[in-house]
Amino acid sequence: MTRRQTAPRPGHDDAARAEELSLRFAEVYGYAPDGVWRAPGRVNLIGEHTDYNDGFVLPFAIDRSAMVAVRLRRGAAQGAGQGPAGHDVVDLASTWAPDGSDLVRDRFRMPGLAPGAVSGWGAYPAGVVHVLAGLDGVAVPGFELLLDSTVPVGAGLSSSHAVEVATIVALDDLLDLGLGRPEMARLTQRAENEFVGVPTGIMDQSASLRGRAGAALFLDCRTQEAELVPLPVAEQGLTVLVIDTRVAHSHSDGGYGARRASCAHGAAALGAASLRDVPEQSDLTGLDEETARRVRHVLSENRRVLQTVERLRAGDVAGIGELLVASHTSLRDDYEVSCPELDLAVDAALAAGAVGARMTGGGFGGSAIALVPATRAEHVRNAVAEAFAAAGRRAPDVFAVVPGEGAGRAR
Ligand code: ADP
Ligand code: MG
Image (cartoon, rainbow, N blue to C red; front, side, top):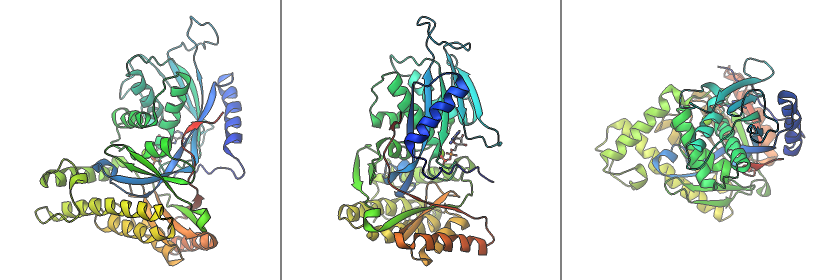
C-alpha cells in the first residue's frame, strides 16, 4: 500500500507554516482564523507495547507536527460572522488528500454526534469534539478547521494523535476550558478509543502534549506520572534517523488486538491485574509457549526502559544503543510485531555504523529509528537505501528528527 508523503519543505519553520496556514484558511473559509495550534508527532525511543500493560515508555516529541487553524462559529445571538451553515456545524479540511486533490473536506453537525456518525479522517477531530461535549458544563460550538501536517501518515510516528492533540489544544484555548495536559491526554485517548474505535494507549498523546525540546518523556502509563529526561543527541555528536519503510502499518489488522489479548490473558494466568505487576524473574512455564514469549517481551522491555532512563540521567546517550538493539530483538522474536522491511532497516543501519536501532511504534510496518554518529548519518542513510534496493524493496524515506517542543499555540 502506498502512502502520500508529507515532507516538510526545507527552511519552512513553524512560524512560516502557521502564517501560510492562516492565509490558506482565509482562502478556504473566507475569513481569518481565530488562531493556529500545533501538535507534534512522536518517536518512541524505547518501551514498545508496554503502554497498554500499565508499563513504562520513553517517547519524545519530534520536529514534525500537525497544525490546525480554527475559527469558532459565532452563535446567532452574537450576530457576528455566522456562516450560512448554522452555528452547530463543524467544517473540516485537510491538505492531506490521498486522492491527489487539493483538499480533503468533511462536515458534521453537533447534535447527534455519536461514535459512527463520522468516519475516515474526520473521526479524529470529531472524536475530540465528542469527548469535550460530554464534559460537565462544556458546550462546544460549531467551528471551521483547516489541518496541515508534516507527520507522515501511517509511518508509526502517530500522525493520528497529532491531529487529535492539535484539535484539543485549539479548543481548550478557544473555549477557555483550562484542561491540564494529563487530562487532555486522557480525553484524546478516549476520543481514539471510543469514537475512532482504535484501542490505543496513552503514550502518543502524552508525548505530543507533555514533550519538551531536548528531552524524552519518561512516562509511567499506570499513574501518568512523567519525568523529562535530557536527550542531548546533537550535543553528544549523535543524530536520530527515522527510517520510514513506507509499509503501511495498521492497528485494525488484528495483530495489535491479538497482542493486547495475549497480555491480558498472560496477566490473568499469572494472577496479576496487569503485566506491570509481574516481576521479570517470574516463572512463566505455566503459560502456553506463545503467551510466555509475549509476556517475556513486556517484562524485559519495562526493564530496558528503566535502564535507558538511568543511562540518560548519567548523560550517556550512546550507551542506550545496545538497549535499543535488545528491544528490537525482543519485538522481532518474542512479540513478533516486526516485518522484513523493519528488520532490514535495523540490520543495515547497524552494519553501517549506527550505535543502536530498533523498530518504533506498533510494528507490522511503519518506521525504525537509528541512533547514529552525526558524521556517519549520510553514510547510514545511503547504506540503508542501498540495502533496500539490493533486496528489491521500495526505497524507504530516511530523515533526521530532533526532540522538539510539545503542543501549543503557534499563532
Ligand atoms: P499513524 O501511525 O500515523 O498515527 P494511523 O493509522 O493511526 O497512523 O492514523 C492515520 C490516520 O490519521 C489517517 O488515515 C487519517 O485518517 C488521519 N490523519 C493523519 N494525518 C492527517 C492529515 N494530515 N489529514 C487528515 N487526516 C490525517
Ligand atoms: Mg495512530
